[in-house]
Image 1 (cartoon, rainbow, N blue to C red):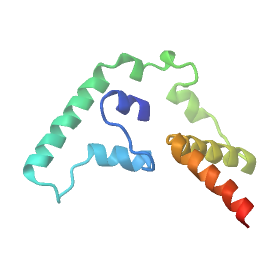
Image 2: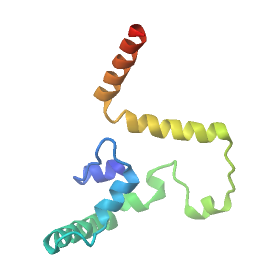
Image 3: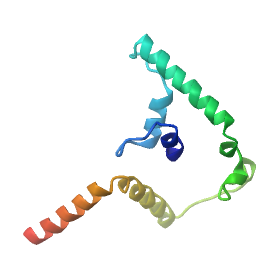
Image 4: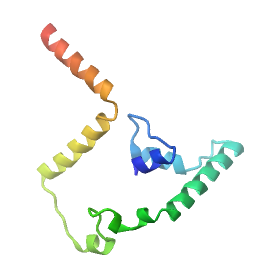
Amino acid sequence: MIPYFEEQGYPCEVFCNPAEYLIELVSISKSEGFHEAAMKYGKIEAMARLAKDNVAMHNTESDPTLLPIEEIAQKTFNPNCFYVFGVLFMRSWRNMMRNEKLVRLKAITGIALTFVM
């Protein structure tokens, strides 16, 4: 979903939780003024129209890794701790690699601190 919203002009910040960002993007809070809420509502309506017109978004044949919801609902899956670790590690790795310069800086800092100590 993050690449889709980036294509639409709504990029997610580097260390922002994508789920929180998407909720913030499509919700209107009470603290917003009328003008801000109206503009955000217009953006939400535009995104909904684009999503409705995007056939590939609703078609599981466009991505062979996606399964129909009926088939997913029939499966039972109990992942072991290694599988869960792998999924969480890859999620963290992808989130971290969104800013490669910062990763390089942290690696250089870690190496430098190793030699200092």
